[in-house]
Image (cartoon, rainbow, N blue to C red; front, side, top):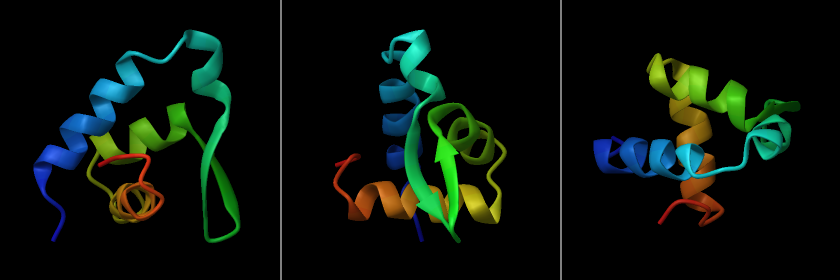
Length: 64
């Protein structure tokens, strides 16, 4: 199970991104590219896809 700390870390990273960078792809889940904005929506709503995104970002060490 994912620690809520990782969710908070993601949101902190997101908040510090320049606005134009939020439209860039951060991860690909099930062959679907996800931008920072799309990832934020999924993670904030605690969806299954949001959990997958968070786990992938942890695996890629984007979130530590």
